Image (cartoon, rainbow over all chains, first blue to last red; front, side):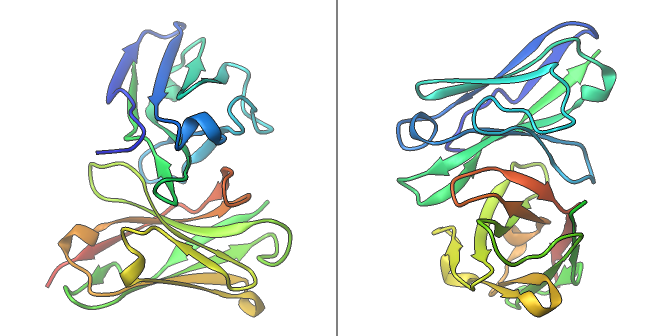
Length: 110
Length: 120
């Protein structure tokens, strides 16, 4: 059971928009920066969003992040088949004294 | 461009020690605020943080694994290592090394991961 709760799976059509939620608590999301990662099988996970809503260089503006209270959200617009992947949120948890990840959301673009 | 590459045995026997090394190229493992981490993903499950090491040798471990984990750094060879003792089948996972921009920040570079199976 992950400390951060994400929907296990989502699906949407190409060109559509999807939002992936990440629910936590005051010991993690509310007081620490959230980052999001895209993971394709047998590849290195890729940083999509850092510091709640910042995009690294090279990440298209179709990807966005936000945070409010104990929850964070990753938004993806103009879905492409290449966006099919697992998406993880992550942050520090002060109660556990550990970095924690969400359980991951498998995004299907069909 | 920074690159991280995990290396080590793909098969470890139960009760033995899992040992992996992450070779860092395209940048120095020393200096600044970067931490160097190990993260794992059991088959069909999510990501689990194992621990961090700073170039000075300071370490931070996941409390759930702390009694069995040792992470060390070798600045002269620009690499860091993971040792996980007394492994069982539940330690079977893809193991990733990654750069942590600060203790509470994000992971900006990752290795491709290496699958370690614990089996006799």
